Image (tube, rainbow, N blue to C red; front, side):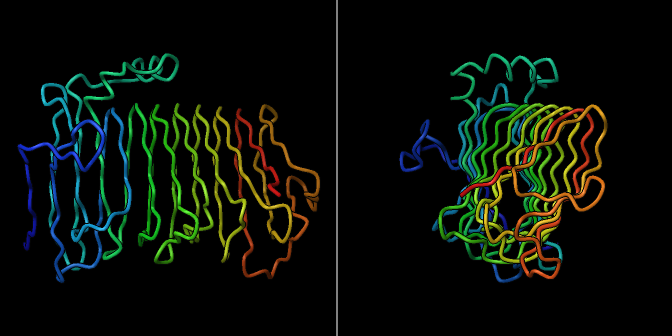
Length: 298
């Protein structure tokens, strides 16, 4: 099995990386033997950034963990044309549900966040499949001008913010954009730049916001499941073709802006609906106890 991996435990502080004098922990070297990076990251707690960079290597990771509390493990292996990379940030204290609820209500201690801070840098040279899982803390994900074929983000009680810079469109067609929110909050902005064909949103008790305020450039299917949480979907007021099918219970609540037209039981269409539109959005929404809101953005 071919392995091309440089693991650097640098002793010197890296002031250029900004926050908390981060150290370079891991680097995956670029090589012509693979064109795709399948990256799995599991973080029990802390603050995490994922962002594009001008680094030559497809994956560079900086961090400042307290090694007495966090046990980082990192693996990389190449199979076929994919480099499978996994980073696990296991907390020795195994923060569970009670800690997640406490964090969600009262927040964490500042020193705790400062000790567990990570930055993951991607490049525009490879295609990425991303699987990112966060327990508690904060996560900021910027995927501008990066080629992401698939992404799945899971939030326990973490607050997650996903964004694309203006004009920073995904460099490839994305198959699936999937988010799972338990107790936390997730906001995904400028979703049209993801170029996702399929969007999956699962919300337990938390809140998710999906920003489609610029519409989409191709057909997109959105499947959403809401337990007792909240999902807000922002859509453009004009030139927007969409059909929404609800699978709801008597205990749920959904809200639509004026202009959505009911065409069948629990089926609505937008003002610009055209079943043959190249940029048609199809929503299938299953709501149990929670609520969902579709709002127009001018």
